[in-house]
Length: 267
Image 1 (tube, rainbow, N blue to C red):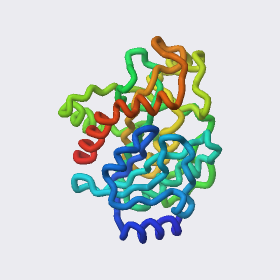
Image 2 (image 1 turned 45 degrees about the vertical axis):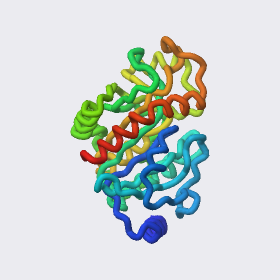
Image 3 (image 1 turned 90 degrees about the horizontal axis):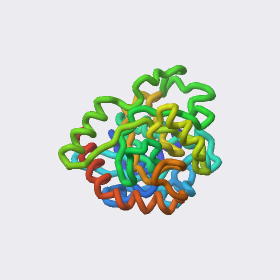
């Protein structure tokens, strides 16, 4: 990790971020509008390249309303064939750079039949159905404890801040449990029915590994899902495609960007 940290500090003139953001599918435009330094994942030592459409693959640094922010403009996924340690490596780097608050965003399918495309959902909890855990393996005591408490990953005080910001902006927020599967195939109607029975409100293929590691590292976590479609078998749902995900997140980007900027100012 030392090579990674030295490279980043040199290229950003020792920029010390306090807030980290991971921008999911179709949500990367926020980083385009706020950019003081930008580093391609391909040039950062020990980073891996993002291969998913809608993920630009840059680490972007910016000062936003007086807050120093580092943003992942696109993430890596388990379904791309990467290991959990590779997927979550950037979160550990953020921790070492000084990040104390991590905002995780994603595009997700609605399990809750009261949700509609372009809704923004605050994640209150998650279900890890990815078949593994990013903390498996030797423990790095400089980052966190072997057996971290998971009773409040998504901090209630950050959720209250997000709610207050949304109210001032006139943005209606949903709240719910995010269910993470490995992908890359979308869930079947039977799997969505199972997820609903288990208490899920939205489904996706990311976020949970980063949330687990950020919590493990002692970072405060806020999660925001952009509801991109009705999941398989949900009333009003149709055949699913990644193009639909990008199209819907584009439609919601104005509200998303306004909310995210307000949250950054408030935390």
